[in-house]
Amino acid sequence: MTYLSVENLSKSFGMTPLFENITFGISKGDKTALVAQNGTGKSTLLRILAGKETQDNGRVMVQNKVDIGYLEQEPELDPSFTIREFISQGNSGMIEIVQEYERAVSAQAENFNESTQEAFMKATSAMDRANAWDYEQRMEQILGRLNIHDLDQPISTLSGGERKRVALAFVLLDQPDLLLLDEPTNHLDVEMIEWLEAYLAKSNITLFMVTHDRYFLDRVCNHIIEMEDSQLYHHKGNYSYFLQKRAEREEIEKTETAKAGQLLKKELEWMRRQPKARTSKSKSRIDAFYEIKDQASQGRQESEIELNVSMKRMGGQILELETISKEFGDTVILDDFSYSFKKGEKVGIIGKNGVGKSTFLKIITGEEKPDSGDVKTGMTIEYGHYRQDGIHFDEEMRVIDVIKEVAEVIELADGNRVSASKFLEHFMFTPEMQYTPVHKLSGGEKRRLGLMMVLVKNPNFLILDEPTNDLDLPTLQKLEEFLENFGGCLIVVSHDRFFMDKLVQHYFVFEGDGVIYDHHGTYMEYRQMRVNEETEQKKKGKTKSEPRKVNKKPARKKESDVLSFQERKEFGKLEKEIQTLEEEKSQIESALSSGKLSPEELREESERYGELSDLIDKKTMIWLELAEKE
Image 1 (cartoon, rainbow, N blue to C red):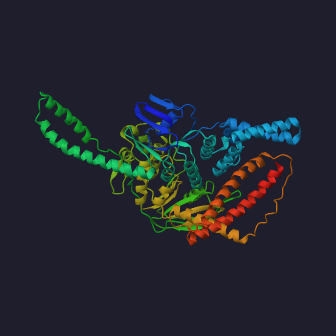
Image 2 (cartoon, helix red, strand yellow):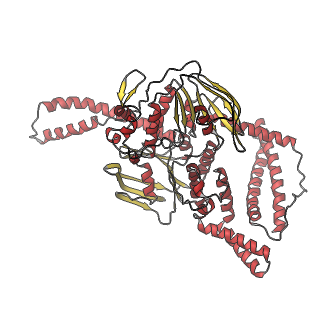
Image 3 (cartoon, rainbow, N blue to C red):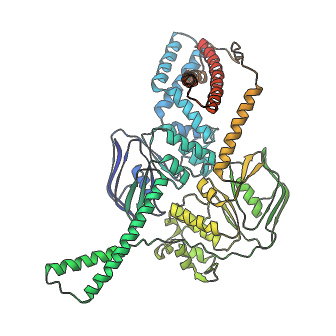
């Protein structure tokens, strides 16, 4: 079933066309990503599909009764709401059912009579019909995973990243038929991204999204739409498949252009003899000449980012951190941390949001003072610090004037000097764009300009805090090429795992409470190491713990004649969990008795069988206690 169709859609920004006459469809179950350069209207297209903006021409057709959920790149939330009030706007019918049940439970506890009993039974039936027990469980899971806990916190007190996470939770909880996501991984830490990956990949939801996170694209999407030069290319597969097919297409285009060029030379000689189009044959050949000329001139005119700026020489001393400590209230950021940087060292920093990564960078540059310890920076070190919130410009200034305020002429690594205008061209800012006010640039174009502002000062120690947000894939690839060849030191904080793994030599992993683990290897190797450690801890914990006594019931803190809302929800959840565990246990029993397992498989299956037995016993006892209350 086709959920949404786009037919001959066009949109311009002033006199500049963003896209023209594009046509595509989104079918049920598709997980589609749109890939295109910054400034080509990706976010605008999503807004049009969501009904937030109108197109110039063309049609958007949505299947009857298909609900659309939309996550904006920079969500605007009503500051007068609390998080709870904002979340409650979504599936309002479901929220009303849950609230009605809570009122019925409270009324029955205060005054048990025939009327309150009837209201309770009615509310319980409504919860069952709407599967509201599952809704509450999903809400807890999603909010917890996105680190949203205080639902009474006003929206007005949230940071931009926190607002993005609240808006993401809102659209996920609403369970629309079609979900439109604009850069969903921005402002999420790596653990949140991995959870979201798994959540979207396993769910039956239909997706259409814009994201630059290549691991995310590869693991979630089964359809890539590439928009280039107002044409759409469809790739039925993940990001890896898209890269392969795009490379093949570009190679074919180069071959065809080269052939057309050879043919053009021959036809050009004939045209120079000034044939008179007196016959239909001559006229046909003249028409064909102009077609060949057009084809030969269709070579890929890709703008290049030449980030080949000059770098100041580095002396013997780079940067030394000696027993640095830092706390904010009860939160420990650093605890006697020491490290000495070497020439050309490239370090990645990862960790959950709020563990102090940005504070660590500010301590290095002197913007923040440590509580104790010394920061020793070499005399020749020139920092280039790109901050998480980007660089703020006067929005009314023209792009060319922003750069000229820093330098009229920029020195490159080979000693050549180029004008500010030429330097902007290296960064894919055409002459027309250079005289555009900053406020007319897309989010990715503003970030690209911000990176220029950092690099134009010729630093030899780069500190990049979330530099990949809102950048398109071509820009990311060029930035990676530059940073790979950059001769100075680099510290980069990013949630883009692909970007980090490609660049850094090792990671500082901020694990919380001032603990920083120095991991030498890729991020994926670190994650696997953590999974192995957790598995070993579980095994050790099981051997140390005493066998559970099945006949021992857990103590009850409070007695009541009626199940509370939380207990009712837990009761419904346990039934499903026990059934699932029993099915898995039955499958393992069949496998163990089949005689087809290897010794290693027998050991693993036997261990899992024991774990399942313990889990089933534990959950059954809790279920029995709640059943008595029911």
